[in-house]
Length: 118
Image (cartoon, rainbow, N blue to C red; front, side, top):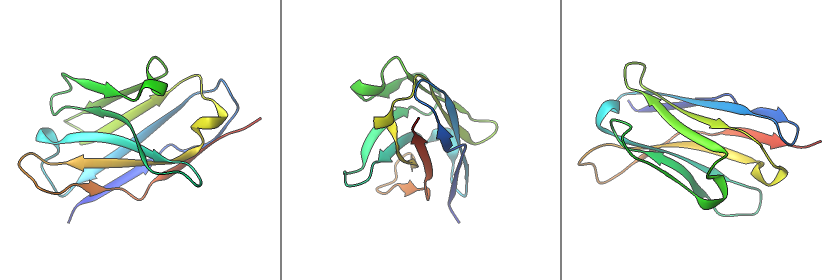
């Protein structure tokens, strides 16, 4: 059974940092495209960043470039999102998403809340 368990969310002041983790199981993590999405209150879910199976390529939404870094550890079946210089507008539930190779469907975690406020 597929599981994606996010952790690392919490409350932080503007300018602060957080590192999110997503522990995966139940599918072949190593060959899967992994992504982080977020959904702010009253807004649609949006892509934050994605990383290819061996980590060779990453992609970021424009508003996160230079502040967020996605990475993965295929030995630990875990994907990370390092978030620096956080802004109040980064407040959202952050979701981990997995798209296994050759799969027509992907999998979502339950999300972790990040609140940026003074």
